[in-house]
Length: 205
Length: 205
DNA sequence: GCCGCCGTTGGCACTCAGTGTCAATGCGAG
DNA sequence: CTCGCATTGACACTGAGTGCCAACGGCGGC
Image (tube, rainbow over all chains, first blue to last red; front, side, top):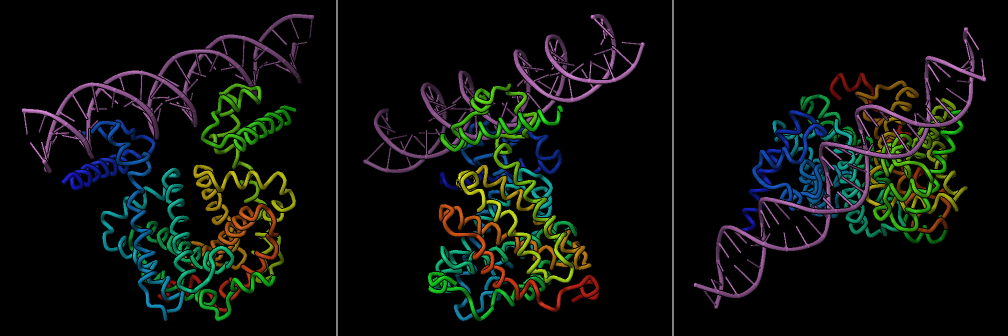
């Protein structure tokens, strides 16, 4: 009831914001313009979004949840490279599937410094989530073992790289093949049989 | 002459800022306080630094140049993993060598969201620089080959991870050993004999 | 020594993001 | 009908960042 209205207002706000921002550029649009076209007050905007950037970037949070959930749902027997590959596919396939909506937003984010910065923050959160997930999956300690965080970093880095390519190609090249290439490249390290363990670290090497 | 004075004022400003920020936290310090203790006007502050964050983070730019320069200076015969390892060592050793100064700044950056965001932006710049350097080093095309950007991402990710560990240990653990561990982990992918080339990509795989 | 040139500075006014506060509104439960 | 409860709008305020202009201060030419 009230929950649905919140959803509605938030959608109205993002839609108005996205249209304006895409047309005039991020810096040239004030929040007063956004709320004017959305028909709510300035104060209400900040009840829904913490900042001007958030109205563009907020949806990335659920993307992060999606990635981590996918990783958590992969079978335990699967190799890290394989599991991470599937996890990274989730948001990228989502982009490719809704390229008419997503492409404009992604290009806006990647070409606007303030938005790209927020995007990088989100990626760092994703990486932390994947790090924890990988650690629990492999029975490693995320605080002492380098592997989980480096592996998560590689996955997020792959995501970022593929997204850039996809964006710059105007949505022409499909992410799937690039992901495949990236992970065959990374697999030798991701799936190396010998990994640093907490015990090794304590014993000094 | 005038150049030296600029250097002097900038130093005065950063010193005053760092002292205040470390004591009271980033958000609790206003630019008016900083310029008051530094003895210059508010307007002058923004002639030297583009933002409040920049006064803390600006030195990272030259760190990026240092990393890239080190990579460019490594012998061409050296393997990518080896060359990148040396490049990443540069800023980390600099931190460890001046840990009395650097540790406080690093901890401030890592625990302040606004500063960490700027830090991530810098890392992205570093990665782009390393990507270009690697591409030219290996005769690859940074636009079509995934390898240079992924490899640069691994290097920057290693830097970030090691810096975190170093910061959280209070400067106790030396970065050198961690870097070694990280690169032996990454070497199988970094130095894999077969890499994607521009020609392979054009022919579809 | 005097004068104009140029770079740096300070002060001022302004826009805009973001926050706290409070009164008004709307709505369902009792 | 009325009492909460949540949402909203309006107002005021702080603080970051920018544009503009006048005032300094060194420096070479005259």
